[in-house]
Length: 302
Image (cartoon, rainbow, N blue to C red; front, side, top):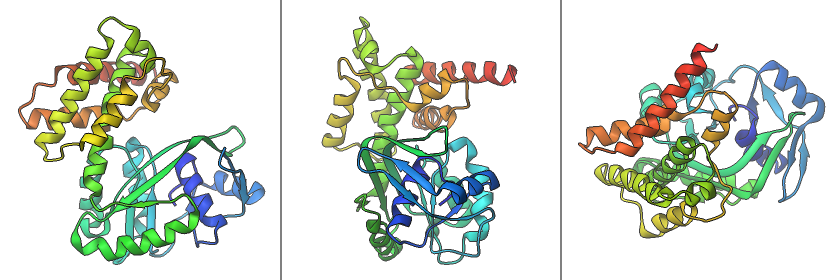
């Protein structure tokens, strides 16, 4: 596991507690913290305190790497895990969006990179504990090529021991695109309006704008030959038009905290793909410009 933050700490901790051989690649300070108190998970699905194995430098090649980091940390993360990647190592990236697949394919070879995604609300508390913020703990993985199917199935069998019911997808790239479409709309609208979904929907044109941005993302996905299923589209629309919702994307929370965001990897990549497909996507372009202006001010402020 690269890191022992919210996502890596939660899934890795559940696996470690079940007896799976998990090593957490962490910085020295985090390693000392985990050695002192163990990995602590506080969750409505059950709290956990477990000793874990940590390393501060990547070990010799391992069977699999679960890569959960922010997109803007990807280059550093790749260099950190590189010594652990051997000829038969599988990498399961749990990043948002799609652009990281090209980067990982080029660095390690496409045959080593599975598809993956997760849906979980998790963060680190002040004392380094993993805070599971709701009951969602979905991890999905799958083969991106026929030759990966047996290895993906075997890894899925190992991950099942963690008790969080991982899903082995027969069409992981479609599922990743569906999340990409939803998240781009969710992040794009809540950052652009700097408000939760419920407040946006109270605006006179709020729902129309939400539907417009979702339509731009769906059209871009369709141009890439990944049309969301009707079931997935209905789920997206239900969440994005839920009156009274206090939901916001983590990108808005990062923005409000004055931190770096994944806007280029998510909104920017969707805009790039729309442009390459000859699509206008005006609302997405405004959303991206808004985030770029925010980032310019953030960087200038030091």
